[in-house]
Image (cartoon, rainbow, N blue to C red):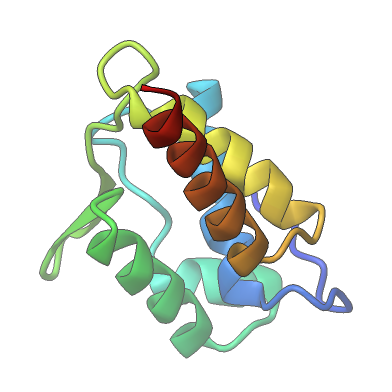
Length: 121
C-alpha cells in the first residue's frame, strides 16, 4: 500500500503522511478506516517503528486521524472542498511548497494582495 523512497531527501515520516492524505483524498481511505499498525507498517517497509509513530502522531495532531489505545489508528472525517473552504487554498499552497516556493514569499504575496485591496476601497 505504501511506496516509500528510502533514498529521497523527503523524510520518511513526511512521505507516510503525504501518502495517507492522498489516500484519503482519493477515497481509498475513508472515515473510520483503520490504518496499518505502527509495527506492521514499519516491518513491511524496513523502517524504524518510531518513524511511523511520529507520522501518525503528527497526523493525529492535525486532526486527520485519531488513536484508540490498544485498538489502532483510524481515519478521522476529512474536510472536503464542499465542507471546508480552506481546502482549495491549502491545495494551492501545498503545490507551491512542493515546487520549492518559500513560506516567506507566499506570506509576502498575501500581505501585498490584502494591502492592494485595502487601498482600493
